[in-house]
Length: 157
Length: 129
Image (cartoon, rainbow over all chains, first blue to last red; front, side, top):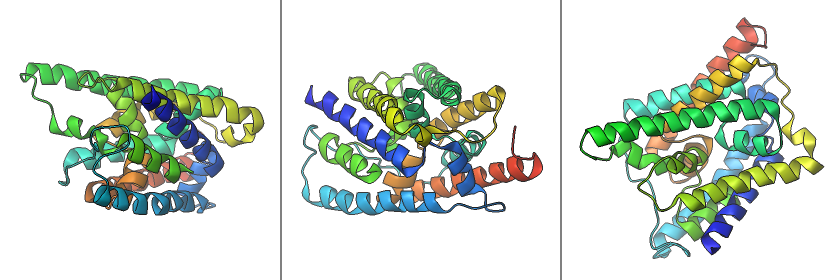
């Protein structure tokens, strides 16, 4: 129960953080990427700010903590190899981000805010996510249940 | 605030706060861990529903996109983040925060294509699509 409530509060805090940061305004996202137009660098500070908060906590936790508070162990990505999927997949994501102005978190929280555009984008996004995961599941079953290492490494993010 | 929420998810749940990864895991079975993912996303929705009552301008779209463009954008974000195993939060914040080489490469990759896409839409297509 506390795990669920904790996840709910985590999602809520994350959602409010995205809104305050301006990540839920597609025009602002487009402005950040518009290097040849009227470039608005403010979102760089959002990402930088989040990294500056996160990095020391992460380094301290993995060095000194045996386990997280509510789970038996940390579930962290272990892969270090760079492969084509990583680069191509991310490149495809970037096209969609630049086209729609939403990345996954802001899209979902904007659906909650009642934005019609976010709803269309978010529904299509979840269809894309679901289709990919179902496709991988079918493929794993065909290859005798072997879990695809890339899919298993989904916790990259 | 984004950093604090991500750090909290690490310290309490031992998880990376990557939205695309959290969402993708809902569609996979080998978990028993689907409920926290659903609750995190319910939290995201709720934040939007409540915050927008006080600050509706925080959710202003401000760009012209047709329904078809939004659908294509959503699909590419959905498929791309699963194939590339991460998005802005998982790769861009947590991944770079972990000094992960994979996430740094991924972030550079999606930043470049996003910038190219914006260039094409704004400078070649005149800003609306």
